[in-house]
Image (cartoon, rainbow, N blue to C red; front, side, top):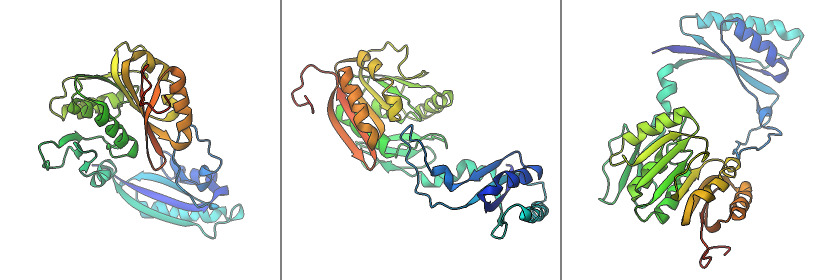
Length: 317
């Protein structure tokens, strides 16, 4: 295991370039900059939910150094070079701090926050490294080891996707899971009774992670995981298409989804921030779908559309 030391300098924004140069010259390969101004005038392209950040003229610049470098001497040398900047910048409120970081801590620290979670009446998500006993024979366990880059299945957008699948899967369906990520929706589809499941993701790492997670769960041989850009080139007719992505990506696949969903089949879309929901709904209705259900948790929305000529009982029909 490799250990690293970090040095973080809190300094006025105007000195960003100068302090970055000092930290790099001290032996760091690069710097990490935390600046409250990054959250000003941000263009919301993909439905991000940004944190509320108090604006400040101070920024934090962090650099990382291997533990074999003498961190005390490095810190002292950096402080001296910062003092030398006083003729050009205000350095009266500068703070310099160090920290020791274990590489293993970066990889595994998040795991302590991932605990078994009962998501729906029948589905419970369980970390692969956790011992957990179902409370009843009806409780189905989805075991995951998502890693830092993929969801644990407990985000509101995933929860609502699981609720939706539980509502519409009756058994024997063909399901297309677009943007599968950790593979949780594909595993859930298998447990709920779907017969054939095709999981797609444009990210090769996600494809590998999904396959690994699927292998953790029994009776999931019916799931095929493939690298693909949304539904491009897909020709499997489906009873259900589910996609938990971002709104501006979802609209790109709606036309393809309409052609692939069988009559009386469903399109489930989640990952939709509130102010993008009307746009997604409009795109889907223009394609020929009818809105059956709309769910929301906080700022997030999930919609269930049906491809049907019988509008009775369908919202907006």
